[in-house]
Length: 223
Image (cartoon, rainbow, N blue to C red; front, side, top):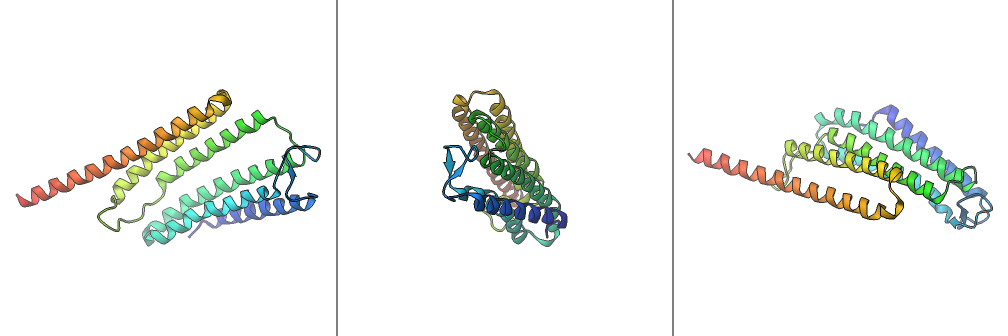
């Protein structure tokens, strides 16, 4: 079902991030207070934040399993190939993120608040672009009833959504590097709302095209 090499990379990343979380938690005098800038820092958060990365990895793994349950057997080889790339990409990104979190809590790295914010924006943008590149290539579940769009239109919808995600990702990367943080909420919020509106519009457009095609087919058959 899942590419074996990708599965081993996921298992290694999950064990490494979980082990790093447990190890760092064991070093803290109080697990409810993990310093953000080294042992002498006055800024702290709950040590349970360390487990956000392995939990996120598990959630990212749900998507291939859900698709595996919904897809027919002939689509599984394609799912195996593209889900493997998704799993490897997210595993690497989450592992790098966990290394940064642990290193920062130990005081090994001490970036400024602005540097962390810009780095977070870039990471979000990279994740968007990974999703936008992989999602359109994933196989589409078969149509189950008349209310769903067919596989061809669903593929078109995924391709359009993939382009939106890549565009959003690029905006987050460039905006995180070039724009001042004061305008991030307005710019990024507006872009995400615009992408959502575009996705809804395209879905309505596909359904309207399908309805018009069905009406023409009925008219042709009656004649």
